[in-house]
Image (cartoon, rainbow, N blue to C red; front, side):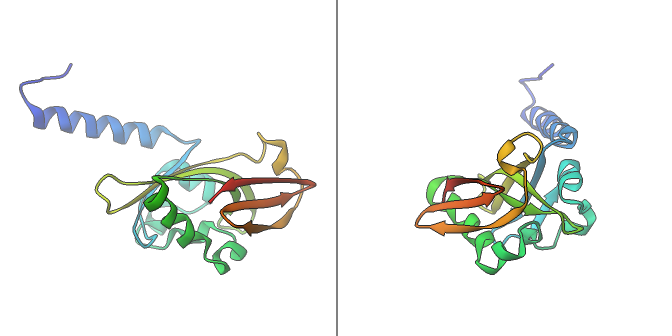
Length: 159
């Protein structure tokens, strides 16, 4: 299928395939932001998970998916800083949908190779993981470790 004599055509084919993969990933939120957190792309999975359409998000702050408590403590900026130091930021935390409902998400934030921003991949883990059942009861930050208490269970991830 690949025409090794035409690198531009090969690159265009790879770009088209990548776009198809991302657009077909309806169960995973995949989006990009610039260095300040402004959304630069937003796939159908992100629209389904967070409730915002691509046209509503591109050009706007991606921080709206964080809970008000996490926004107040600077968590979005903290999460964007970690990939610069550690190469990526893994998180298990509550996020918030457009209508205000919270859900437990598993996410990964990685710097784009161009260093012009980040790519975030997230998945709703509420139904899959028992530790997300119950009500939200807040979070705390201890050193480089983030913990959240959900129901009667605490979990954490390194920051």
